[in-house]
Figure 1: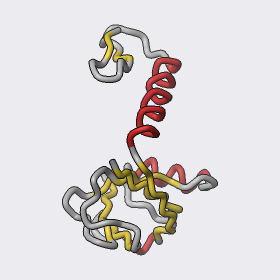
Figure 2: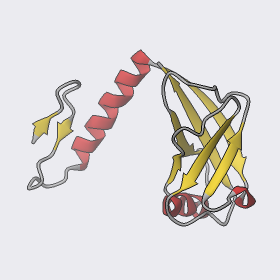
Figure 3: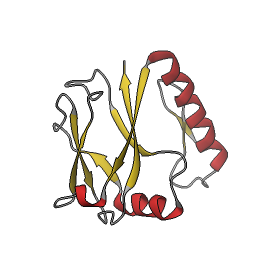
Length: 127
């Protein structure tokens, strides 16, 4: 096991056994650090299955800034159904780099394009 230089996160070596408690500890540390250094705006939207074109969908919402100081994280809202969670997991949804404009953001399904509507939660992280 080695440790990251900045926040002492646990980094297993390739021959180490995976330990879920190490992953949990890392997430707890990251969460605590982010809370002290950032502001997060949360925007809930429903992304229709018909919004996808060639694996890309555009999310429009006035809360999306032109050039955020931080990142935009795309996740599912709490309460998503099992089918929605499976569809999102199979899609591996990521923001398209350089696509962000005032009020809109493109996302890409890097896997299977969802065939059902997804309850999306945008976390706009401002440093």
